[in-house]
Image (cartoon, rainbow, N blue to C red; front, side, top):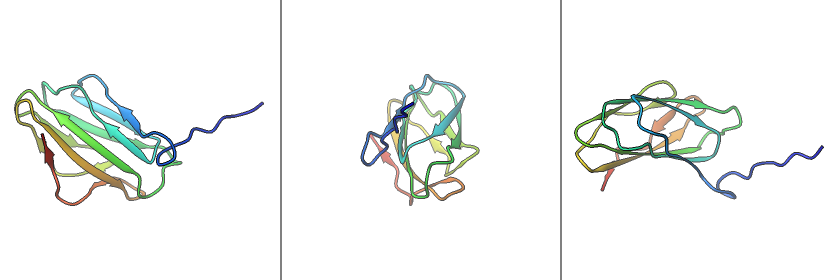
Length: 113
């Protein structure tokens, strides 16, 4: 029996997760680069992260959060960062790095488009 290994970022594609809106988002990280871009938030959201045992320190998680108003994104288990408060029609983008325990926000940069 032959098994095929999944080629992960940077030699393969990033993992892009775009789930429907939910007040609790459960994110599973299995790649060295994950882009998390849920549907437009219409209510406050809590994000929880589970990390696969194969993920190494230094893995990156890019979170893109778009809202219809001032909905918030609170970080729960597996991720550390300051609450994001939205603005109608704007997307806030934050970068997180895996420490071996949690994903921690990288600096204080917040990109808004």
